[in-house]
Picture (cartoon, rainbow, N blue to C red):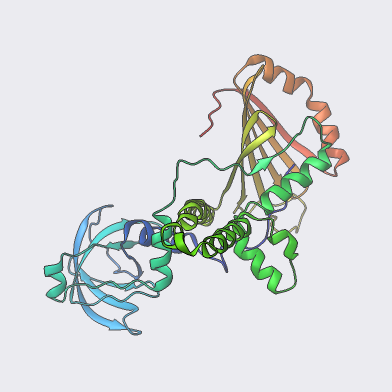
Length: 353
């Protein structure tokens, strides 16, 4: 079953993928990403990763828009909010070519800065995020789902899956905003990881304050424990907004790991009715390694009330069982008010990251 996802993004407001790419480069690489808002009619030859020099010829909006000459061609570049760029000569590297041309602002030596070349100033929020993300541990797997499809009815499994996604912490800021607007329950917000981490931090700090003799040596232990987990959550939130895909890890039932990916496809598909409006397309991919049947992956596309299902199975026995029970799948979807529009079963290799 495909869960209903929160309509708001993982961060407060809506961020375009290009904006998130800029934030990621700013936070991880310590470099600003300057998007080209205006480009010459005939672009000079540029290669991804190429380092170029830019001469600033004009500055507008308090330095947020720069007109620069690159390879004798005039470009308008947008400087990210909360950052200032000074100097007449910039050292840039081509970061992206499509869909938006952008340049990464390169770090300058102290001598170059004294010559007035470039000075980048991060906002307090950017400095905080930079320090926090440096404590993350990307290799640490996240367990978001805890199901038991062997014992639960489909409706119960769907509700559990929906609750797991909603309370994963990946939509925490959106839920806080909804709570302030009276559209979200506070008790549900308090069940998310961020609330748990904050409670742990407050408890540890209170305990530390009660032991004044050891406060200086213990006060930093709690933040060191909390920061990596919180940083991982922020990193995953950035991944969701940038890739427009929600990836979850967990267990289909005790002892059976699984991976689930959910995304909304941006297509112009229609329901097939004359005059019908374009419909949203949701795609869910599930992969798992079964003890007896080997690797199995399923992809479900929901187009209106029509469902397209494709299976990939590593073992012939597994693909045979899926085809054997195709009518049962079709009748089950019909009972839920859905139409199985297409079913594809094939053999192949199933991978799990």
